[in-house]
Image (cartoon, rainbow, N blue to C red; front, side, top):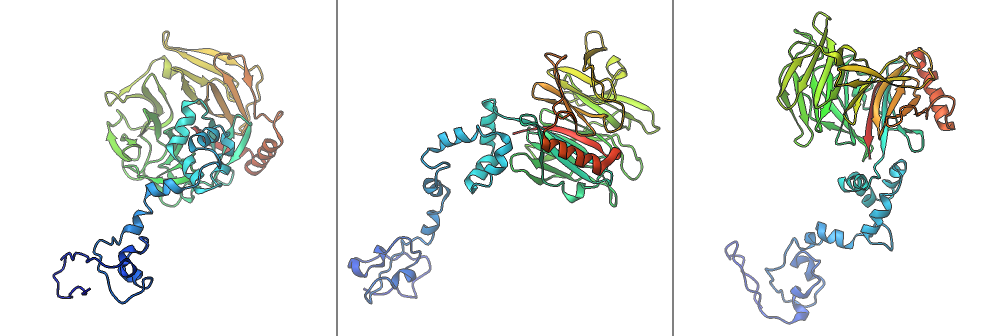
Length: 426
C-alpha cells in the first residue's frame, strides 16, 4: 500500500484502501486520537491511511450526557428521584454538612431545583438574618433558626462592608441577601453591590448601582430592588434620584426622581406602593409614596404617615408597627378609617434601655418577629395576638444561645446595635 503523497493538495480526502486487519490502524482502540498514537500498538511495516479518524473522538466521550450516564448515584442503591425525595426532607440546619459530602450534592443544593421543590412541598424554612454593628464599629451577622431556636454562624461580611455606614439591605428571590451603597470611612459614598446566597453560603458580586449614595431608602416590589434618595459627596448633597435593579436581567435602570430631595429613615411597602419618610435638604420632615405601575412619586399627609412609627412591616396585606421602645406593643393600620389601632400587648415589658430596644420587625413565616439589640427575639401570631413567644429571651435560652448572647453583650456593650434584619428562605 502506497503512502499518501506529501504534494497532495490540502483538504484532499484519500480513500483508505482495503488491508488486512492485523496491520490496519483503523481497528485500533477508538480511544486513541491519532494514527501516530495507534502505530506503536500494531505490528507490521505498512501504514494504513484512515482520514476518518476523528481527533475529537476522545473529547466526545467526556460530554455532559456521557458523564451523567456513568456518574455515581446520589445515594447508593436508590434512583436519583428517590434520593432527592430523601434529601429535601433534611432540615435546613444540616444543609451546610450536605454540601461537603461530594460535588454532586453540592451542585444539587446550590441549584434552583432543590429549593423550588422544597418550597412547592411546603418544606422551605425561613431564617432571620441579623446584621449587627459592635462597639468597635465592625459589622458581624448571624442567622436565627426558629425550628431549633438557635443562632447559626455565617461567613464573614466582605471587607468592603465590614465598616460601611448607611448601606442598604434587601432580599431578592427569597434566598439572596443584597448589601448595596453605603459610605466607606476612607473612600466616601459608594455604589458597589454584593449579595449572599443562602443556597451556597457564599458572598458574590453584583452590578454596581448607577449612583453613589448612602443613608437612602430601599424596598423590594415584584422581586425588583428599588433605591431612592440618600446623600452623596458634592452638590447637591441630598439626592432626589431613584433607580431599580432587576436580578433577572442583572441591570440597574433609572426611574422617576422624587418630588423633593430626601434622606429617608423609614420605609415600607403597603398596598402595592412604597411609602417613605425622611428629612429634606433643610432637615424638614418629608413623606412620599411611589407607585411602580405609573412610575410616579406623590407627596402624602394622611393618617397612615402621621401615625407611622418605626420599625414597621406588612403581612398579608396589613400594616403593623411597634408602639413602644422594647417592642412589646403592636399597632395595626386600618385603611377604612385611616387610623392606627392597638393590636397586641405582651403585658411583659422589658424596659427602655438601648440593649432592649426593638431594632427590627419582620414577617417570619405566618408570624411577626421582633428583634432587639441584645439579640433577644419575640414571635407574635397575628391570628392570635395574645400569644407571644419569647424564644430567645435571656431567661429561657438554650446553652448555646445563652453563651452567644453573653458574648455579644460583653463585646459590644450597650453601644452595639442591630443595623439590618432580613428573612431568607431555603
